[in-house]
Image 1: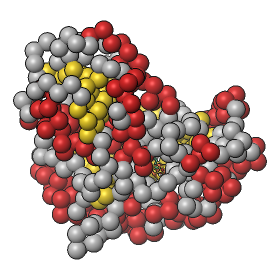
Image 2 (image 1 turned 180 degrees about the horizontal axis):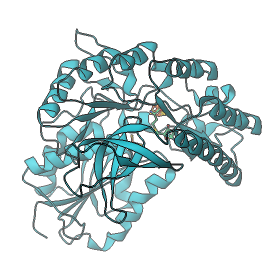
Image 3 (image 1 turned 180 degrees about the vertical axis):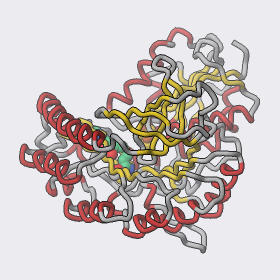
Length: 440
Ligand code: SAH
Ligand code: SF4
Ligand code: F3S
């Protein structure tokens, strides 16, 4: 176990995945070497998620596995949302941990690492009082074709169920100049797809005098030579303005997909969640997308069994699914989280009832996806090739609408990162199958 080796495991959302790429880059620049197993590492890092209780438990079960390695020259660090949420309490639950740092402190990582390596037993980075974003030239990106780019950090909303404002701190946008410079650099390096990230990516507001809003930023990024696909996630419905749809209509580089989490179809539940929009306002945004110049995939997140959710509220969510016809959906049982306002709400929904509602919702959504995907059979879709499934001898591609499209092609290598035209021949609830129609 040579000194200055590290292992990192990442949980949670794309923001966390991208933070890990930046943390890895920072560690490499500090002279560390990345290894593939925790056993081989001197420093073991977990970049954690606490969005639901199950996610939070994962890190503690990982740490438990290595309890006996404490004091044998191995160091353990907890990063990310559980670190920010639990803070120094982590040292009580897992005494062999010596580094606890939330995402707002990663710019201090080199300094924290020096403290660790010079024998400080416990090191923390937990301040949320920052207007910093973690801009680093050292990012070690995982994928050579598709790059994440964080444009806004934190969240200023206060949805009653959600830990993110506590774990990621207040909203802060990068300047348009620094975002544009990074996007141009990525294009120069050969990336053709960029995914803009933010907890509420569309709440972006350029803090520099240029003052661009999200729609303006989208339009400008789409003009960067070399970029073929620009995606963004996650959009908050309250801040999803018509100008965003207009910007997308104006440029095919902006992908045919919007993730617009609704959480519930009931106005009563939306108000209890403090989501800041009504069902009618949400549906107005959906109308903009449905009336747009091209067909956009619309996807969403839904929470079932929020405290006080009645059968009638739930049925309104089912009804919303019928109305919107989502292309794909992430659905969750409400999970009570520390610090959040919903903890104080009466009329919790039982676990069994949550499970029942989740199953009904997922069954309905499955039927919708089977139908929508079947309607694509016969279409020719452009995919970006993401890899090869050796077992099926098919290439794995992704459409602009964010569907997985597995396809056959005479070529057995060299397609990764390429754009290929594929005729859809079969469909399932979660993916499509096809064959390439061009040989480049
Ligand atoms: N900023 C995004 C959501 C980020 S969290 C937005 O506002 O839409 C990703 C998803 O996790 C949420 O959309 C929500 O559906 C789910 N989620 C968040 N907190 C949850 C909780 N306490 N229990 C269950 N699901 C939760
Ligand atoms: Fe959480 Fe709401 Fe902020 Fe999304 S908008 S991160 S759900 S508090
Ligand atoms: Fe999880 Fe934090 Fe992302 S709680 S979902 S890793 S912002």
